[in-house]
Image (cartoon, rainbow, N blue to C red; front, side):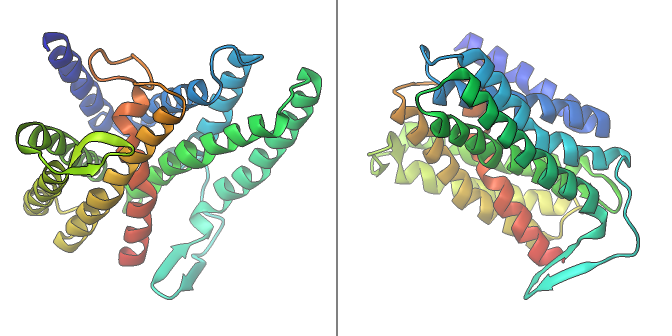
Amino acid sequence: MKQRIISAILFAVAMLAGVFGGAAAFYALFAFITAGCVWELMGLLFQPGHDHRLWRRLSGVALGTAPFLIFGSKLFGVFPSLGAASEISYGLFKANLMENAIPILMTITLLPLAIFLLLILELSLKSERPFDNIGHYLVGIAYIGVPFALLINISYWHDDYAPLRVFGLLLLTWTNDTMAYFIGTFIGRTPFFTRISPKKTWEGTLGGIGCTFLVAYALSRWISDFTPAEWFLIAACVAVFGTLGDLVESMLKRSVHIKDSGSVLPGHGGWLDRFDSFIFVLPFAWLALMIWEG
């Protein structure tokens, strides 16, 4: 327990330093987290004994972190807008294409090229299941790389990096996870999803959701980066998709008969164990904010 508390404190300090240390610190922190999560995911998908396992994991990390690294450059003005705003609108959804045009084009160009290079690599490695291996790389991009890239857009507000938006989203996600665990441990009686997570209960799940909305209310009184309605919208995304994200990672670990994705945080598992809910929340929070903010 002591080791668990110490590692939790050190982890929290490192996260706060990265989030509030400015755009460069944020970029470095989440590039590292993205790479760590993809590394662990590749370790789960490419099990020990898999041919050329190390090189496959490194290839997966390179591909999986590429979307974040490319889009993250927006924080430093590397990719300026191509010109006047060009807005695409479909119902409630609105987006400015020109401010993201260059990183989008780079991603569309480089990632498919990388996939073709990996196909050539599979020819030389003489793998028995080459397209299964390619599928693992694509899972790393879609499941981890793209959500963290969307965090860039969430954190970018009024043409600048906005740390309180990132902090609020992290706090809501960890409130949901932590309070669901503690409430479920002490008063949980009714199983929630025994097929995937036998210890998860309805009492814990609903308790975590309730605490998440309470924290969202507190944040709405303190942080003006989001409107009160947006804070509750994000809390709803966390309540639904954060819970599902935890179950999805549990499903993944069960499928390969692994308890923790890694051991980088003593008593807490690996990077993927710490960020499974956050990763799953990001695409839906991004979409909700794009619809709401326009």
